[in-house]
Image 1 (tube, rainbow, N blue to C red):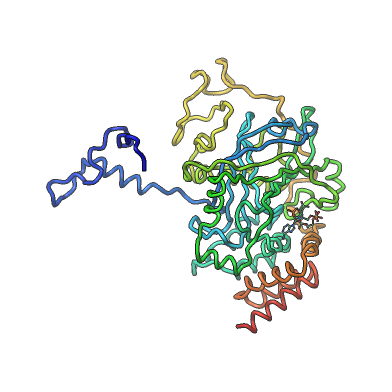
Image 2: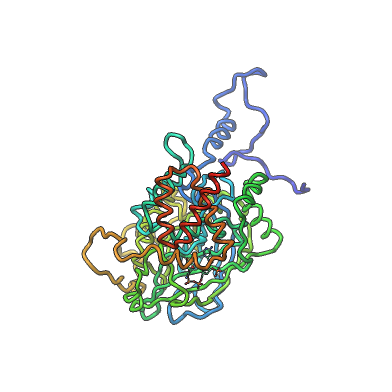
Length: 485
Ligand code: NDP
């Protein structure tokens, strides 16, 4: 309730609306009149209230916040947002991957952990997940993988058979499958999980020297997870548990925080590292590449309008700033194309000019016109092409990155060659205590329940190659489930 004088209701063109309860009709029984523009506009707007939902990461929750740099990596990067004591505003969107916009929040799934930093040198988007790795290492496999996570074309149901068929034929997925079905596959809320930039990026200093980097965000709220049974109970009561928890915490002033960390690898270390360091199915072991704390990420302001600030939020790994660059990570290279392309389709050509996506620094380019071109041109109107003689914006060669070290002829390499898919899931399995191992195996057995035996056995053979105890554990959990009927 408010005592404020309400503003005048208007059409989209600003004309006063005289009656918002009754359509204009040719008498009390109708019919309605074509000239009732207010009615036509209202109905037309309702038809257009939805935009295409994201094919992946459709269901999301987010908030505004700040990154404060407390460490010193100024010898490694000239990025202004990563200099000691820098404070950068940001917006973070969490999400599930597979579920549609209306999916329940508490589903077992990887979570997106995507951050847009509004730096004075342009927007830096770190579009990560709550896991340090991913299912596949080649973007050519990504659409197939996502098809297995989505609905079957005939039944329109999600298909456990498709998921396990694909996974059992793609051993590089073992590491992520192990994380997904472990305790951390079902966080209690977005506050109770880590975030990872996952890919390898470059850090570049003033001298143009490169090191490779991975970014981690460690929760300060502690890890909390639900078991499958607990999640079923929660979803029975609310399908919006993440939105409720995140929104309420921030409204109450309980601002969630994460410690930002980096792992650094030199170019020469990368050459001798036994794995391909740019393989997204692998971590860099902490013992070899220790983490360094460099800052604090805090969420401290809810969006005022969910659609404008969270649904229209558009992030892409293509958005880097001076001092941060890419790497030969194949998945990163694929996402550099596909994320920006998804937003052009979902939001339109000029999506970067929407308020939530708009950089805080000046933007000057020669892109012209197109649907929803609503930023005023801020340069000399004669300078609408380049090069020109009218003081139009010019390039900055000093920000040029050193070339990426590339080797070999262009070819379609079989990435399984020399790439062990078992050592790292084994290292993870060996970290688990007996209870964690038992829950992992039970979660997998439950998820495989309807899968044809030949596919299940092919997958169990892969688990056995990770660790005999892992394969035997899943087999035994499967038999227990079968006995229970
Ligand atoms: P460490 O013992 O140094 O670190 C283990 C890591 O595992 C910690 O970062 C921990 O996160 C994380 N972890 C614990 N439980 C789980 C889980 N259920 N799902 C995902 N991560 C979990 O080991 P190494 O660096 O030698 O790596 C061993 C294995 O740990 C890897 O094969 C990988 O599976 C996993 N891991 C490694 C990471 C890395 O960057 N090296 C990052 C995350 C996982 P926390 O610190 O928050 O407790």
